[in-house]
Length: 546
Image (cartoon, helix red, strand yellow):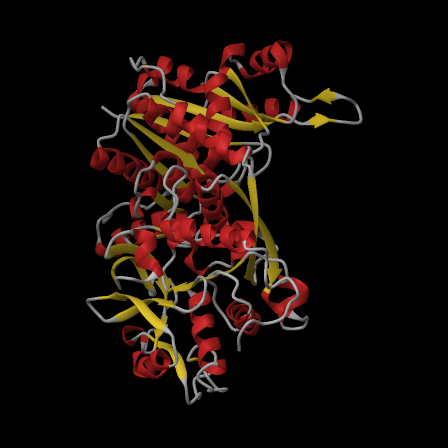
């Protein structure tokens, strides 16, 4: 019998509902309970796949090819669960499902309304996931902020679930902000009081409050919040600012969150086994080494656009007892300034994925700088394609080399449109998405990193290495070290006589976990550390090769 924890947010957005939900999932799993995670987003897009990163941040792709909210990345990293399409539901999906049913005639004779049809569809998605996983506890995060018009159907649906399932199977956790006014040296509880008041007007009485705060609340403040929100002081739980998100589960456990949840449900569960997690946090926050890596992309002003990459570097750094200091370099800036001015002194260069021609030349220049200065390079998706274009132009001597995406009339389209993408006009959900097999070449850097000859990685792209030009590129020193066997698609390229130069068509960052960093990120950080320890031979900015 699955119990349901519903996580809502109030006062302002971006308080960290996803981190809070993920942390609770980790704590309950470490108590021996099985947990499922689900995110409801109130926007009308079917998924975030067509949204600008500046609007939404990273698109997190699951094994089954779903393009989902970045919070699912936190869910996977904290709980270790592998999630899928049913773990992220948008208002667009809800309404699309209802309208499809209406057109089929499923509602013949009835007026289709928000209540009961929309709320029933939402409840069906919640109960469907719980039924398919059989989890002891299903944690459901409701996106947005209490008071948003678009969130109302979701809040109404979970209100109905309390009536239908009872208090013993439902728990409402509300995350709010308790601001500290520095000039007055006062903690203000009024925003939280009003947020809970608005939630109660909808018909939901929170069972627990998570209070984001800069300063400790103290017993008096917690008692005051409890009094005005109809809760005991023990149900008002501090969620203070911390130095790393990976400390959040430890702090929430110390403040009693998971204890209160299992007590609410009447579940008998042991104390969580958190020694390994504490050790991880110690390695993250107190490393003995440091390494500098440049991330060259066009969304560098919004780090959430590369959220999984940032977290992957934290995981890989912890594995090497090192802090990875990221230097964010706008790829367009590289097009107008000398590469040495922006990249000299870096121990590694990573070019992440992206779409569109803007900033592409800067990514190509970054790949050239790393290759010619023998600085470790890691290209992901478009970053791999940029490396291939650079190699073709400067090593093969094809100045017109390019991608079909940017130069369809080029005589050397080293990157071409996938065959099954020809004629595809609809943008949403039509790329090569999800997990595919990749066979690795023995003796390659990829093989050394993974320690196996077959891996499965997640993809999100329309363009691919052009096999027709492969032999010419190979003859000049580019190595193809990973292929998808079913369609003979190139997945990994390397420059073997370089200290570490690897490009991958897939997104390895999506499968990195705190206790098990992705092998390629771990190998890249190791190469960067080795470059640093060798004394930065590129420090003068003089290329080692052409």
